[in-house]
Length: 66
Image 1 (cartoon, rainbow, N blue to C red):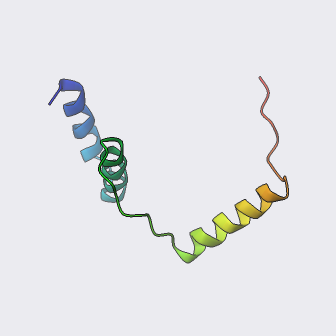
Image 2 (cartoon, rainbow, N blue to C red):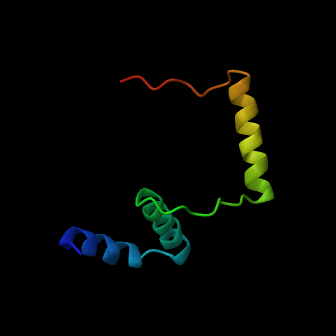
């Protein structure tokens, strides 16, 4: 294991368990190991449906200009 990877593991290990699991799942996906689909709560599904409906209607937030 490289020093950078060890540092990343040490840093992530200090995070809450839920965040650790999310990051571990992402890392396994990047490594090519399939992960089970993420199940959304009813509230998350409703939020997603509302966001998709807004996008379908072309309702996007204001543009950020620099």
